[in-house]
Image (cartoon, rainbow, N blue to C red; front, side, top):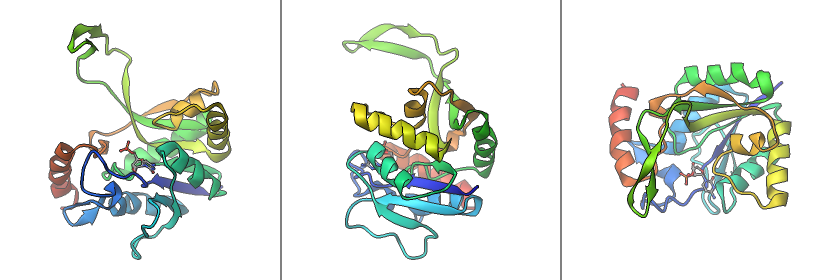
Amino acid sequence: GRTAALIPAAGSGTRLGLGPKAFVEVAGRSLLARSVAALAPLVDEVLVALPEGLELPEDLPARAIVGGPTRQESVHRLLRATSAEIVLVHDAARPFLPTNVVHALLEAIPETGAATAALPVADTLVRGEGGRWGGVVPREGLWAVQTPQGFRRELLLRAHQAAHEEGFGATDDAGLVNRLGVPVTLVPGDARLFKVTAPGDLALAHAVAAVWDA
Ligand code: C5P
């Protein structure tokens, strides 16, 4: 069956403060161009959700649609724009995507129909209570969830339709699928898959790009 990469890139980039985030450049190349380039050789088609009024740069091997007011709505729209059997959902804001993570994900999807890249938590975790140390949350067994996340399209579409009808919002797609009672397989992600969110993340992105682009 066919595989599609779905890239939500319709965020406004408010926290970064440099305009629509997917178009922000790191070492001369946009976050979106980097994400598309990582996925295009590994899938049959790449679909991107863009902010209204913005166009896909012509040299990118992808098809664009207009995103929604939330990431979840952008992904829901992307899902309805493809008929691929397998979909890989990947944030444009995670521009450094190692090929081996995509291969591991594609291998894991058939198990339950859903898999995500994730990393075991390395820091000590603590609950904040009014700005004070409220007690340690044991980090054993805790994972930080990344993208890409991979699904049988029909399963993810069902999860989105259910969430939409029930007014349930989530920051990722695997959570919506797990809500249906379907197990999600955790695949080792990569520290380089961090999400560019705050201005400080750009310095890190430049450092990674210096090695990545070499
Ligand atoms: O805001 P955040 O960094 O968590 O967004 C994650 C991804 O979702 C980004 O690539 C962003 O462009 C995308 N997004 C979207 N539509 C929205 C909001 C965010 O496609 N309405």
